[in-house]
Amino acid sequence: MFGTDGVRGVANIEPMTAETVLQIGRATAYVCRETSTAKRPRIVIGKDTRVSGYMLENALTAGICSMGVDVLLVGPMPTPGIAFITQSMRADAGLVISASHNPYQDNGIKIFSREGYKLPDAEEDEIEELVVSGRIRDLRPTAHEVGKARRIDDAIGRYIVFGKAVMPPGEDLEGLKLVLDCANGATYKVAPIIFSELGAEVIPIHCEPDGVNINDRCGATAPGDLVETVRRTGAHAGLAFDGDGDRLIAVDETGAILTGDHVLAICAWLYREEGRLVDHKAVTTVMSNFALRKLFEEWGLEHIESKVGDRYVLEAMRTSGAVLGGESSGHLIFHDHHTTGDGIISALQLMRALRKSGGSLSALSAMLTLAPQVLINVDVARRAPLEEVEAIQTAIRGAEAELTGQGRVLVRYSGTQPMCRVMVEGPTEETTRRVAEALAEAVRAALG
Image: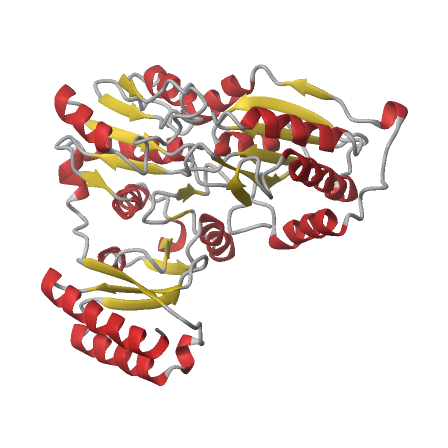
């Protein structure tokens, strides 16, 4: 039921039906009651702008209240905002109804602990077991022990204050013209307010959600309109968030798109300049570009590599003590500010770096020139352990020898489809393409 980022699927089809979501609410409330020290446990529920959010919000609320736990409803709010409210209000958990960057017909549930972190695997497993086994069906508080629900009307205001506090005293965004693409999603209210109140001239686009237009040819996964608007208006930068607001993709003043790797490099430069990069460490993932690794090495930074997924990035950060980490997809975590990825915080740190550099965003991003990358998906008939397939290991060794330290090879199975992903980064487009195609052919011959 739980993937790397909660439960997700097509709304009104298992597991995202009102019936199953009600049981998820009951099971989550049960786990909270087991661990809570409060006389009356409380759970925060927020959502993005999908039309199915109304149905699932009511189902979750009913399930939680039926277990004798109170509900605090905050309405549409970015995922990191719900993590913040959960921690700020000392609630026992926070539930986010969102499918992030997926199309509107999908929906999902993410769960945060009372400390504002994604729920550990062990607690997710317990919730899933309770739902599947039906062990909680006969636990029914009655009378005054049934939970209550109320709305927190000032939740958005609290999160706006929290977001603005990222900007140190004496710093602002005066003089910057910024285009904000809110993907018709959860940031549509808060992002324009935060950047405007910090002094920027804000040009908002895709800030009119109607329940079905979230992520529809807009936002972090489709920044075409953002590129065009930045060029047309002469803005200093464009900032695109995804549907639930935990991801950022930026556009410079020329309309060039900056990946999460670019933003991570720029923010690492900022933190390094300000002496805030604890122990000179930063966390990347196995999919981070080879050029980013080389840049960090040149700067004398220790880069720690995690599995793909922001929860794994955060896990590596907490283990190592790093305050900065992120993915090329645009999930960045500033652990000195928040417990989870936050697109607005990422955007504010990027704009701080822009102001500190005194130049343009294109000049700033030139510190990182991405290595050519080729990704080939190979359909496979079987999923033998890759390390045990000698033909593939021989091909990998040959590819690495040809790259001679000027690139890298990554071969891994898809987590959701019957395919093997072959990724090669190298010194030139031609070399990278040739090495990748040869390696993909070896995988195809061995597993196809």
